[in-house]
Amino acid sequence: MFELEKIKTIIAQGEGVNTEFKKSHTSLSRSAFETICAFLNRKGGYVLLGVKDNGTIEGIREDTLQTQLKILTDDMNNPQIISPVKCLETKVLEIDGKNIICIYVPESTQVHSCKGVYYDRQGEVDIKLATYPQISALYIRKQDGYTENRIYPYMRMEDFIQNDIEAAKREAVLRNANHPWKNMNNEEVLRSSKMYLRDEQTGKEGYTMAAALMFGKEETIHSVCAHYKIDALLRKENLDRYDDRDVITCNLFQAYFRLLAFINKHTPDRFYLEGYTRLSIRELIFREMIANFLVHREYSNPYPARITVYKDTVVSENWTIPKTIGLITPENVTPYPKNPTIDNCFRQMGWVEDLGSGIRNLYKYCPIYVHGSFPVMEENDVFKLTVRYERESLFSEKINVSENIKHANKILELIAENPKVTAKEIGDILLLSERQVRTIIARLASEKIISRIGSRKSGEWYLLKS
Image (tube, rainbow, N blue to C red; front, side):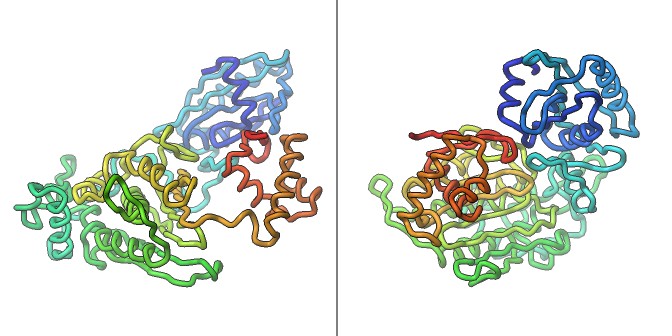
């Protein structure tokens, strides 16, 4: 946990969602407790005292070392500072002849406050949670169980769209001629799918939120989830508003087809043979995107869920309960069902496969759909998935191709000279706007010519290709 080389690597990578530096040269930084609180509420991490924001090791003055450690221990056991209290592991390490205090903060199963204020971690910043929805979302993230299993004792079969349940049965039987749903009535389908539950602690029983979301009438859905809505937007020309829109307030069974129709309307399909079978590669990709979008949304949160078709990408955004933070790849994915009951229903109909298979399929088919283009999956409180359906124009449209190539070469030279150079500094040197510089840098990164190590504030660029 506190191996010297590991701590050196953490310092070299810079501050981030699970790393924070505090100077604390002569006294313990009081803001350290806000960070500790944020780490407890998020994914845990390391707080390093005696290190400046830019990663420079200033060290802690020897005569204050034991005092700072005592204050840290005392205050972490003081409910007036951190509530509920939490014991932390610490260690003093010597780096380059200077002492630093390493604090390891685990992710907590409880919700913590610092001096009565709740904190969460986003990127390199401790966020003060000041509104009821923010604090409520934190408690939801920490709770045991799934909100889709909330029981509504007064919900009846007439609150569901019977034709949708029948259609779901047909989808399942089409996939498997001997599917158990084949000979079940609609009520039996819901009960066998764990959409009718009994709470063994309270004795309360009835249909669940999952049942309402999956097959409910609109008034049924809004009685259990008043903020439920999905926005499908087209923003190719009018980026401030939209060129086309479908506001979806129907159940998930219908929403799946509505979203697919909207995307098919505004994106191209391409010829693709898998073996000797012709497949719609667009459908392969966007069925995965839509299923992921609907299955893994945290429906108790009012954050608006949307899928937006831009000029060359489709982007989905929905609130979730994250298990990892940052970019997701097939190598680091940790499959976790956010709504296992809804997930199982989709699985029975063949709309999703095994956990993790969706990401593998996207990585398989996206580079075929648009040559060399991979999906970008970012997990935080909001899960964001970006899929490219057209080749992006070379860099910015505001300057021509030859100019872009010239500027790209200049940017590479500046990065080689100073890996810590900022986009603003590059823009000042090349007489470009910061936005133009960031656009060119983003393209260089997507082409794997350069890579960023560490945070925007204290990280560095590395040349991957000469």
